Amino acid sequence: MTRRDLPSSFTIDPDSALEDLGNAVGSGALAQIAQACGTGLADLATRGFGLRDSRKLRLFSTTEITRHLIPVAPAHFRRVLRANPDLPQGHSETPGAAKWFTLEEIGHLRAFFGNEGSKAKQYLPYRPEGLPARITAVANFKGGTGKTTTAANLAMSAALDGYRVLVVDMDPQGAMTSLFGGEVKDAWRTVFPLLARHYATHLRLENRRRQDRGDAPIPLDDTLSTALDLRTDSLIQPTHWPTIDLLGAQLDLHRSEFQMPVWRMQGRGWKLWDALGDTLREDGILARYDVILLDTPPALGHLTLNALAAADIVLAPCGATFAEFDSTGRFFEVLHTAFRAIEDSENQAARALGQPELAFRWDAVRALVTRYDGAAQAEIAGLMQSYLGRTLSPQRQNRAAVPTQNAGGFYEADPRDFNREAYAKDRETFDTTYATFKSLLLGSWRRALLERETG
Image (tube, rainbow, N blue to C red; front, top):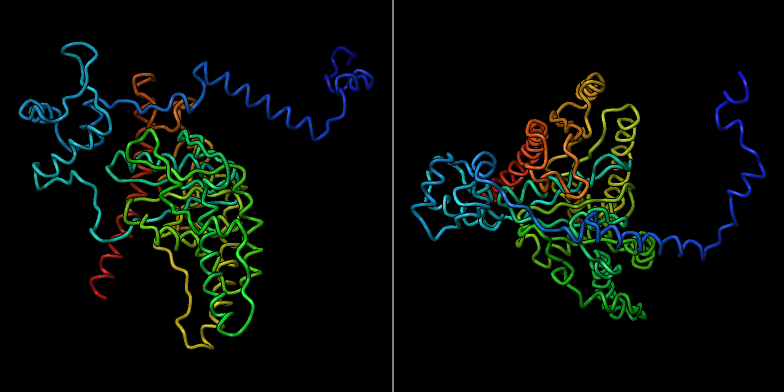
């Protein structure tokens, strides 16, 4: 082998490498890099690459509505529109061309068919009156498993199905927030003040008990005093989806992971794992929405712990690979250790006081195969199914053939922009994934309804 045939890594000159290395990098240079990224992102946004500047929901065709959203034949759908001119009539690019509708208009049409249509068909999604929203936490240890993509597409599917959806971004990286075009300036626009308020409320009650015992109260600092005045409604922002709202995240949310253990040490009786769920219930959020989806960071910290404790349903996306199966197994092992430790600690005191014991319970815990490649992963996916049984959803979410770089999720992609066959194939896999999730959702509501009826 001559020198010309050697790999490039064999021909690096140290002096040239030093010249390419440049000056050493200090902390000030990191700010310059961040600024350059911000400037570049702003430029990309003006060129149509950004998410925020393109956050306008697409229209939906008559074909898509009658095939996927409202169970009515196309001919009957058109007859109903002609007979009811007060209903949304859609928009055509040219006279006589196909009609296109906004999601708000589809909501009006769905309500009309629900009231006037065939009683044999279910035009409106199942939602027992008087029961709270179902909370779903999408979680796993490993990054890149498709947590945010799964949560986002489920949120969009549920919105298309007629549900009112709240997406709560609990990942300081804020990917879900960016996907829905959210603006979050600091930690005070995230779930952080809700967690702080829960502790501040506990501390105020504890201080009353301390005063009754003659002990000095623990003062509330500025953070806790400010949090007491904040409610969830003030933190929620609308999105370009008319029935999806967002409680966003950004990097400063990470302070929760450091602050919550400090509060717990100060207030030993504070049930930090209940902070999110208790606050959402107290603020009436579970009555305002039908479906609440919690997107968690790729770690079992205090944010993820809160999401899981608040959830009725837990979904763990994972790939059909040895490494991801191993990571998912460790994830559930650590979950078991964490929640069992909480139960044991709390119940020791509960038994001594004759109080009811704590027992965490979820209506469903499921793993979901994402980014599935049937040609390469069929064997390992089958083995995963055989070991996990019903815990692993039989629906495998294929790798999408339709790119959605500038659309936040699959359902934001305009079908006209893609190959019809590829789009239909992807639509089927995402629709089936939602059907699997909806079955869990309806089963959870049904269980709650029967428990309420039987007392």
